[in-house]
Length: 490
Image 1 (tube, rainbow, N blue to C red):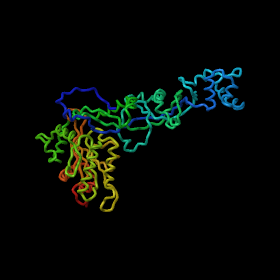
Image 2 (image 1 turned 30 degrees about the vertical axis):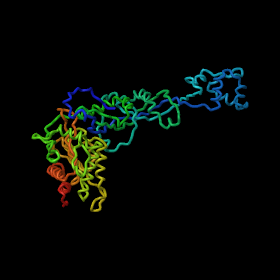
Image 3 (image 1 turned 135 degrees about the vertical axis):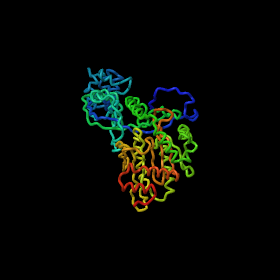
Image 4 (image 1 turned 90 degrees about the vertical axis):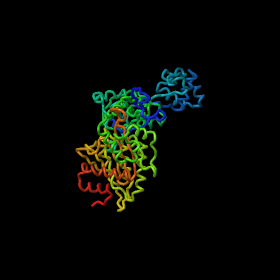
């Protein structure tokens, strides 16, 4: 279910793409933390049981023939005196059958076992239960705890807007438990074919807090990328989202908080793209810089696969989106074929945008690139290439967990909206993050991936020219500089 905003009317001429090319596009993916707590809940359930076959048959017979004599009932089933006595005791003990003057009648309770005109009796037994159940603290809906990695624990957390209500969650859990009881019911018990209803909720005890994750995909219409919306279908199906409107709203607020205003750094970042790939961007270059809207239209409507004869490809949206990840892996594959040695470093310049790549896809992508060349070192070593993050100022914790080395600078030497991923002499991705056709909005990632040797050389030199502000360790600096310059380290 996508979190949609109130519709905004636009003139046709305002759209960035023609109506026939307009479609929903993905801009980014985020995994955000959901605060939760376990609660120990004492409760009683009414469990539908089944009577023994002999008792069931007796009850059905008495239902069909009220006042039947005990002798006739015994003869009907072929019971002897001992068997008859046992079956009658089993039906009489819970008060389902009444014996008068040698005849049998159903009691009110016995007759009530035949629900909704059913021909079979149903018997419920009330049983005490105790369960520890996790609930999120935003919508008070069930949330199953799971193990989170150190990377996940560093992701941004959804804000609890009503801290007082969250603090008194235990008093509201009985109502939430009743509401979601069918969802909470143990699958193993349901697999036994039991019908189970909640009878009562007794004391509730607050236990440990924990965190879970919510994945949201930020989408927009291609014609109006600033009118973004959150899609939570990868987290839960729509009917479960409908039961958790507070979380849907909290995610929408998180995405709304990612908006940025245009800045002078936007033009600088777009100019860097031109400087790195002037031949590729020549049709989109004006005197004042990149024709952003025209290039955006090209990236949205004509972006294609990377090929041996198509060394540079445009991308729109986060580099971690599935189509863009494929293009990244393609340029890494093609680029590795034109470079005999295994690369030693992965350098990733992080742009100054809120919650950049805050998703487990970042961790997976970095790990995948690192292990791609594992065991391919010419010197026989099996260690993977080192992943290095260049950022200013210090990054959030999830970013620190994704990279082996985090190199920071007090003063950013690169334009704030600029993102560069480079595997020396193999491939490069360069992206600018800025609102498109609006003074303020979601920063649309726009750039290219390439394994073109000239583009790579320019990118390597550009990163090398500014590397000293981030990497202060002399030995590490020499190694990275040597890799960028394709020289053997001293």
